[in-house]
Length: 194
Length: 125
Image (tube, rainbow over all chains, first blue to last red; front, side, top):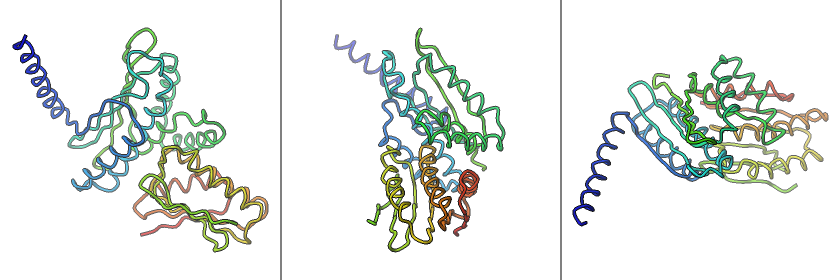
């Protein structure tokens, strides 16, 4: 039994090393799994800001990364209740990753969503990705006006903002978890040569 | 009218609404945990102010960052100023932005498009 335990620990530590190498390969600078709260949002944005400042990233790039991180994190925390009944991945939880490559930063989020929400999410993302700069500005203005009138209005404002700030399409993917929910992955890319 | 003043933090803006001294401004960063709770007292103050406004109201926005959730609340504030203007009062919005911040400049232009109130853009170096 003693040897078995030792073997398990060793297996786990080897996994940690593989995990570390894999993070390096994918140039991941920050990874988090758990509940996304306002405190977490503040901690991650300030950590990333100070790292970027240290690395003398341009102000413009720093601002864009900050914008994207805030909107992505708030998307997860805001919609936490929508899949509260889910038994596989818990309410308000998700995965959050920041990676830094030679030419770009990317911010990725993953969280479980109820299948009933998928069509609307897909519709919003497809719409945002299909629009050019001027069209996005018009949609943004329309959405903040509607958002004033009801809490439900203004949906997708975060997605619109991300595409406007980065000038890049949002990449997304839905992976089925079970009959009622899927894992929703979203990646935003910020050019470092902006 | 009572003075409304809160100091800015790293996630909430500084706000001063002081009718007696003609100081009306919102500055800094806005990404409060609960945007509705944060902006409600500001809107309430403006509702009261609009009942007995000064001859001229110059409202300064000196923001360096706001999230999309705050953008709706800022529009609420601007709508109050529009209300004041449309009821025949002298109102000016001064939107100040850092000279290297194209996005904040554009945000001002967009608000100017949405609300009907005299709007001045001021670049700060």
